[in-house]
Length: 128
Length: 137
Image (tube, rainbow over all chains, first blue to last red; front, side, top):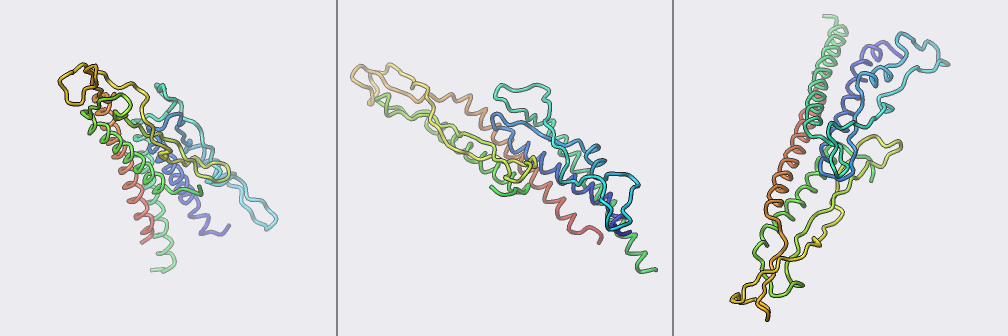
């Protein structure tokens, strides 16, 4: 992995996980009135950890295998409802909306961090 | 179905809610559709919603909703004795559709709320996407 990749990996991974979570929460909200639909979500903290993988382990040879998973392989779990409804739907709008708002805010924050890193890179390249 | 984006998800959910709103409107419009026979009276309609999962390996948790059908209610029409009504049958009965106006109004409110929720999802996703396009500028 080259230096620029490594420099941007953390924010990039976080961003794609946030995007994935945005899709899942959006699906939950879309299915708020569908009988038997089970709300799902990913645990961001653990998914992020496993996506980043083996901490400080680096691949220094072409024969080395990359450690850790990818954002695409994040574990999707089922939400445990506070008060289940009779039609078997486990979407609770207040919960979903809260998570959605939180996720959107974090997405934006991550975007800011990424933007900052890119700016840093740019100024390093320009050498001004 | 192939893969879904969040725009597909919210858009199709809005279409489904739109169908639901149409059924509510039809039902409410026909509250006074009196008939002289129980077979000809208007039957309230209800949409059937079904989750549509994105058809990708290892189901990625993305799902939208489609209206798979609209079904007529099986409830019996309301039989009223009104011999002076021009449509009354030979025994003096008229038949009104089995529409629960209160339930329809509640349904309408819920539909409108969920439509709004999907718009909210759509506009948030759009804002984030536009900001992502401009990252690093």
